[in-house]
Length: 204
Image (cartoon, rainbow, N blue to C red; front, side, top):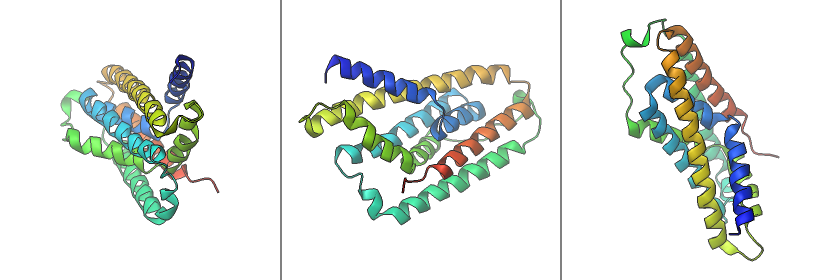
């Protein structure tokens, strides 16, 4: 991969990460609710979810979505329902300060899987990746060159989402004594993630 193409890919991906979508909303929401450790687990999950989509692109199997469209859509709407339920539940929590409440127990694996599923069932990102990544492969580059592009893309994506989690951790500090505000913000982010996933439909 040429240096100019690599720099172009890094810049383009960084700009994409800077625009919040369902994945970022989930990452920030989980970091505010559970802390940086589980926020990072969410980042790992969303990156793995995108990696699963990118693997289909590299293998030339993006059209597989069309063959299993009903199952894919079922998973997507299940994810939407879960995120909305999570958002409403968090929004309705009381106004306790962080130090007086018992934080909900969530495991690293649970939030990693949550992030993976939310990212993997987003059809819009699958179609986007199928159109975006090949642009950085030289003519005749083949699957090996596309795989190299995919690795760099996922690396920048992970780093950018990690910055979102770190920013959310700083916000969590000044929200320590504003329980209701924190719950409303976190719940709103979960609802935003659910809405984004619901609107992420395949182009017709």
